[in-house]
Image 1 (cartoon, rainbow, N blue to C red):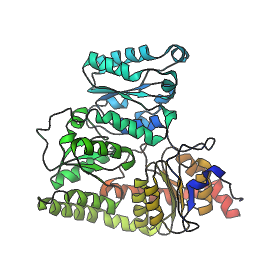
Image 2 (cartoon, rainbow, N blue to C red):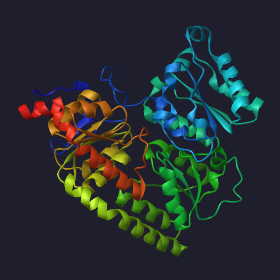
Image 3 (tube, rainbow, N blue to C red):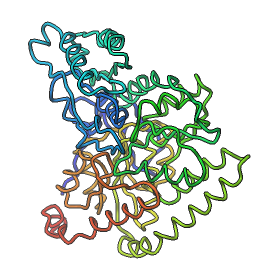
Image 4 (tube, rainbow, N blue to C red):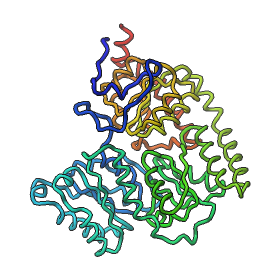
Length: 453
């Protein structure tokens, strides 16, 4: 099969480790015409704020933007389910011509009266930025009228990258921080940032911390509550899982409330254990926390190791491709796949920075493709050239994997099972094993074509 060419303007964002000095270009707008896999600004803001379950989420824009529903961003809630409803002002041609502010005000008036949320987030989409609706003014008016926080989220999709959406969401979240009493907040306490409770992952992680003796004041972006966010400034430490999304907020809380933060990952055995140890180490005056942490890690690892070792025998030597949103997740996935005996031949992200890509380059073997803001053609090209057996990505990468005739593991917000924590590592290994070893791939035309050649 002839090699598929890549666009000249994309060459600085694609590197093969070991071929030339590593200097990744990243953080720039997507190249026109390359049909980027990267999500837009609006999507970035939606990812962060959507899991706040007792808030109203209103999309000010055309109905198509409301396609990002709970069904593809399935953060679970232990209580209110308001976040599962997808509200939109459904802007049409007449609204584009004459403006949509009155429609937005009417929608907020009706929805807040009907659902009685603790707060309301109003997401600005592309067309709102173009026609110039004063969303902030409408939100301010409705906040005074209804007596709850009504927060504009400036997430016009065209104005940047997904990372700009994260920033817009953090700006909105920060307006809730500091509004509540901290009387019941322990000195041994944390906030969890950037854990979205997909398949109940936040509940697993929260349980570990509580068994350690650490109070979790707020899981801001997983099974989140407005009141908990309001008192989160009383916590002793912010623990940031999705650094690309929530570091902005952690930095703002550090500056305003002097709350320190650390970066963690809950994916894979090593990083999960390190995350617990790193938090325990922040409370040196309470050595019993570290003792309990060691016990938890030992018990959890012993419970999953026998089955993991059995799975590893079948996966030894298989090759994997990774394309995810944040690079920090890619770090952990590389370690988890290596633990299962698999080799990573392609890795990329939508929002990585230069430091992230330098770390990826150090973690990968020579010959590994490392790429930023990829498109379907590039991913297909390297899956073929590297003869990958597995693709780990999200909903947009799933059809690419199946067209290439290889196994797929959904590690984004569309999945329904937890892949974080120790038990999540076992679920991840089972899913990878089931997908990679499925006999169906031998009948796939793409695989048959390779064999015939």
